[in-house]
Length: 208
Image (cartoon, rainbow, N blue to C red):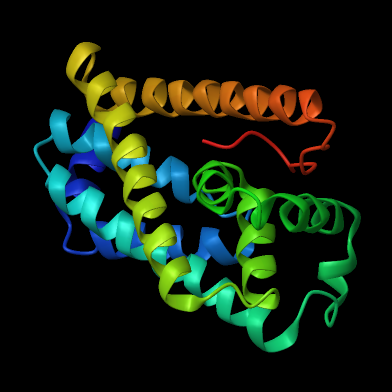
């Protein structure tokens, strides 16, 4: 029954627009499960045959890029402390980390932050507020968003290809794998940042 529901959802013309909306919202609201959606649809692409895997990757990349650039524009227009949520403990810590790192190794920071929710938000806000040149930042964000989309969809597709049991099993295991890999990324970033005496942002949970 659940397999049939997932097959129907995957084949729906609203499947990719739904994923696009979740990824875009995730860039702005942090807690929306955009990563999970891309991974799940990556698994469905190989177990059900729809939506097409290339479509999943392309739309996820475009949505991630647009979301990150919207946050960049917000930072450029309003700064880093106009709204209350910007002064919250987690966001403030992440902004402080982004400010210290952004101008020394902007490409590395942008790529790393794409996989960590609060860091992603902080880096894009800080880049806008710090007036990082838009053309240069646009290229960095586009490349990072594409790499992120390929990674998230590939996790789902690989699990869906290797694990028997149908769409439900593939989706559940692929989401679990993505969460586990996200925890590993967070751990690596934390240790590398600590080794450099630069505290990493306090994330709200595992990136996926």
